[in-house]
Length: 133
Image (tube, rainbow, N blue to C red; front, top):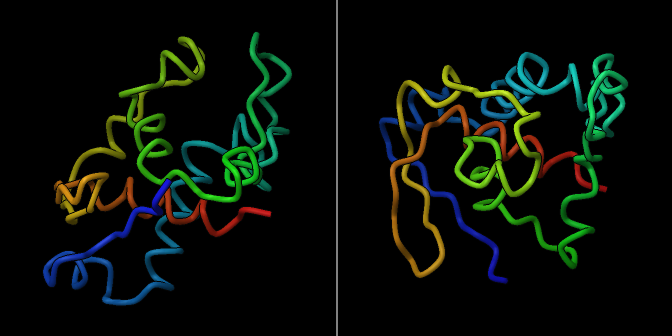
């Protein structure tokens, strides 16, 4: 699978401070706020709420490994935003409405289709890509 390329427009780049480091900080902050409770601070599925769940949260540091070494950016964002969540986690994973609000950036999806995507969702997916092992 061809790795997706993420393209930020000038306005979105200004929103994120025009630097990758700030986007990483936004992604990490969103991970801590929305995901760490179940997936753990280290993203390995060992958060404080993990033991209370019917379905164990997956180790998010192994997404690329489970996909032949490629990080499936589009699929990851689809699971987070709920588009394909039912297939992945049933109803266990909560809604992340606030994560889907606000400014957008243009993301190139399969087939070269440029689609406006919430900047905070993109930052979170980029953070997850950065913690792959």
